[in-house]
Image (tube, rainbow, N blue to C red; front, side):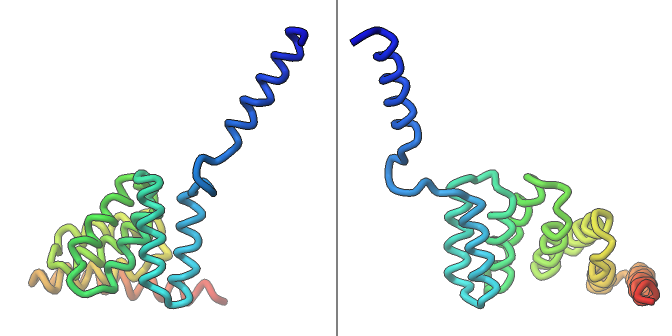
Length: 170
């Protein structure tokens, strides 16, 4: 066989080997996450959690996978610390992810980490002003800390933000 044909044959064989998955379908963290979201929305929380966990196993640096895990742990009893851990990882991996900061704030609020929750809610609101509930939750955190003045200040900011949003409708 001429040398040119051997090279073409070897190249074809190499391309075939590269494109054949070793064990069935290659797992994709984005696909697993999206399937988990669909399950979450349909109320199949446990199945969604498994897919989010699998997504994180495929790519431990995938912020959305940790966000999904954290969101579900927020719904479960005695999983507040786990929710905080995964949501912290999500914001570490994607610091611009406003909703991850928001849910991290909720997890911190629920676990009594009021100062941390205030910081997380402020970051959420800085990144996305449509998350006015952040202002309300900052008010709640200050109230729970016993800081009535800051609680009132942030509650007023929340009311003003809501009124501004209502004004934008017309």
